[in-house]
Length: 140
Image (tube, rainbow, N blue to C red; front, side, top):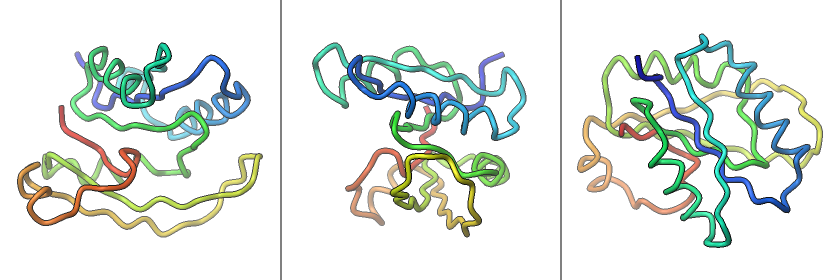
């Protein structure tokens, strides 16, 4: 059985391993069942962030993809909110992000705002698809 979510994390060999560990810990604290997700940490091989994400997509086997940068972390219950929205089987699910200027993981309460789109074409026609790839779940 394929995992439900493939979490792709670009990581450069010179990046801070402490931040990567914080990122991984935040994913494991989501409470997702073993086997329902996979984490793919990819190196860009000197070709940039896009190349690392593309490399991760080629390895991914999940129904949905999400990109999380190595210096980011997921808020508590993040994937729980996502799972309930996936019953609609959208191609794209977008959400808000917030910047945290702290170096330690400190969970805080946040109101999550989500949008779902039945098809990728619907999303592209109604949105200006700019900004971070880390703001969306994508159906493979």
